[in-house]
Image (cartoon, rainbow, N blue to C red; front, side, top):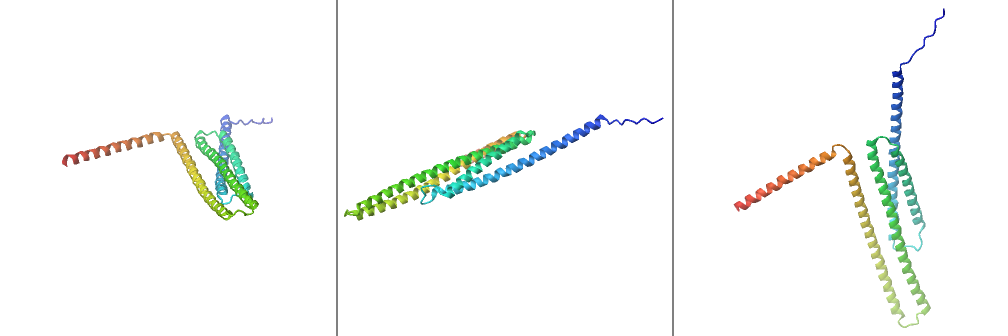
Length: 260
C-alpha cells in the first residue's frame, strides 16, 4: 500500500501575526517617507523665502536712486520677474505641504506641522504685500521724476525760444538755477523720508510677525499636556512673591515712620 501524503496545516495565528508585521512595516515606511518629504519641502520653502527677502531688498533700492529713469530698466524688470516667480514657487511648495499634511494620520505631529504651515503662509502673504508696496513707491518716484523732468524741459524750451533777448535774462536764469538746486534738495529730502517710511513699515511688519509667532507658540504650548498647569503654578508663585515683597516693604515703611 502506498502511503498517503499528509497535508500540512499552518496555524491561523501565525498567518495573522505575519500580516500584522507586514502592515506595521509598511506603515512605518510610509510614515518615514512622509516625514522626509515634509522636511525636504519645508527646507525648500525656507530657501525660497530667504531668496525672496534678498530680492526684495534689492528691489527696494530702485526707488531710492538719485536720478530715477523714466522707464523701468532691465535689472528692475528682471528683479520683479524673479520675485513673481519665487512667490509662485513658494505657493506651489505650500500646496504640496498642505497635501502631505492632509494625508498625515498622526495627530500629535500634525499640530506642529500645521503651525509651521501657517507661518509659511503668513510669511508669503507679507512678502506679497511688501512687493505691492515697493511697486507703488517705485511708480510714485518715477511719476515725480517725470513731472520734474517735463518742467525742466519746458523751461529750457522757453529759454531757447526767447533767445535771451530780455535784459533780465541773466537774473531769470540764475533764479531758475536756484530753483533747480532747491528741487534737487527736495528730491534728496523726499528720498530720505521714503527710506524712513520704508524702515518704519518694515519694523511694523516685523512686530506683527513676532506677535504672530508669539501667538502660535502659545497655541502650540497650550496643546501640550501639563503646560497650562505649569504656567499657572509659575504665575501663582510670582503673585505670592509679589505679595510677600509688598508686605515686607510696607512693614519697613511703617517701622521707619514710627521711629522717625
